[in-house]
Length: 289
Image (cartoon, rainbow, N blue to C red):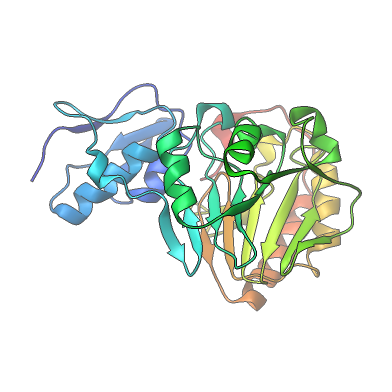
């Protein structure tokens, strides 16, 4: 149907394009590579999604720009939960999400700033809160919060990344910040890393843990743990029994839906494995996507 698609050499191997266009884009020698051209409209649409999400704009067509009419973002993942796309270089290409709620929508981390995207997010309803999971994803938080008239949240451990935050999460204990919305401090990836659980269904884990297609399990990105792998192990041990959810929605790494009891079983296994890890040099190429 179309033979002009490719992935250029600017790719940073963030995995986002492979999540959106599985079977069309794969990993080879530390970056994404086009495996084959699309064969129908569904596959063409998947490549457009990857192109609009790629933070480096590395998913390209040789003769045309991505068609704005085929921009699928915000993309519905489940009832009331959307993937924002348009990932940002300033957040290392992290995914961000919007949750629709009767009392005000939640933006968890942010896409790259663009007024047309902000307008589309606003069409889904009033955004009351921008929830940052940690310092690495704070770059556009203030701008989106100001655009929506929303409160900006971050943990005190990473407050220097968003010193003008409106709400500061403190300590290590879980806290309900809105009806059905619980923040769980989870220091490890950074000192101020947190995750947000909404309605005991959706867990927005930032960079604390993710679903790995390589291992078919929940994993920590031990090779890019900036603060302390031992603290992350302690956080997981402390939190495993407190967490109940069925959707794992990370900043980096793949998404996964499992029954809550299966998620909890895997979290206990992750805590045990993480306790056996020791500090290692930062190495982005060692992440097991």
